[in-house]
Length: 120
Image 1 (cartoon, rainbow, N blue to C red):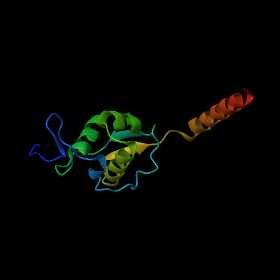
Image 2 (image 1 turned 180 degrees about the horizontal axis):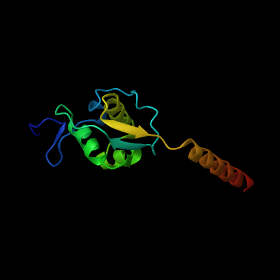
Image 3 (image 1 turned 90 degrees about the horizontal axis):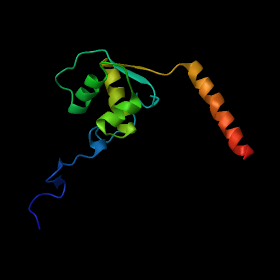
Image 4 (image 1 turned 180 degrees about the vertical axis):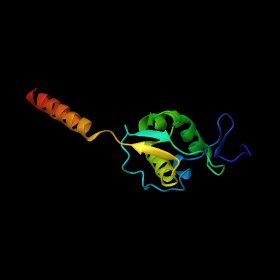
């Protein structure tokens, strides 16, 4: 048996559960962020940000979607939404939801697909 703790992997380093990054919270002001909502950095990075938030600010220098951020940081979308909600509350980012007109056309397309599937 090894003397190293079980939470340590020699190749990967210390393992931190994604929800530990957000102190176990599952809700924030970012709960309503759509996966295709656009995130853009609007503030400078204060020194007290964690590495994940700093990575978000770097990635959001140009507009990026919530889903793309989750992929970029390799974190669950729920964790990303909590981090983004905190960052928006502190004025570091802006989040723009897709236009309402676009969602109506998407709804129409989905209804057509459902009707087509029912016809089969």
